[in-house]
Length: 314
Image (cartoon, rainbow, N blue to C red; front, side, top):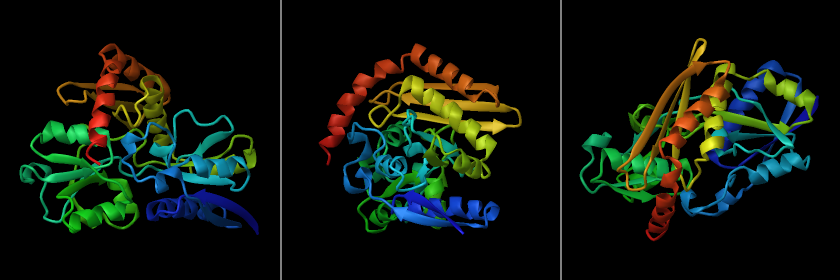
């Protein structure tokens, strides 16, 4: 029996996502044995809030290095953690069917966002989420939070935070969807590009493995992600400049929603465009052009100052 080595982070969520991918692969490749190799990344060790780190790929770099060196045959990632400018030696060989891209609210009192008491402390690891929370509830105390999904939920239960905002897909994948109080609409609370999708990365010249991984590819999920990542490449929304973007396919059409906020939350650029599902990157480029034309890049300086202020809260 052939053995294929799979690289992943060691968190509960990362392992769960890897098992989802492997379950699909085993259904079509019963004669292959998959060996899971767990690897620590900088993002696992450095506990600062993500948006204070002016660096890409903190959750995938070490895992992908193992793939490049031949220590693992392929890697499984949260797609939103994979930089849009991936190393030329690697390729996103497969994107299985995407889970929910939505953000959700978690608290232990069953309170929706509009029901939280003024001054309630709400935790998030994302500037994108923080500024959208401030838009809808400027009377809340939004603070940085780190740790894995389970740790963040425990901080709510222990009273350190009144609520947290997390990705629905992550909670569902580790069997914790029962803690969800409210599911935000992707149109009103725009998620991170690639949120809810899994990326399977391997060496670009390993054609046999690429063909194997392609068998669990979901074309609609690939189209959505391509549109979102084409947008990122042009506008470059990173941890220091939050960009919300989500694409939704419907038959032969694809709709891309994008949103950028000023650091003080007073200005919001929102764009919605519809394109052909077989031309997702063209659509992403068009939406990016509109965002830039309307002043998205001019907001970057304000975000640099905002990050410094958030650092002072740590």
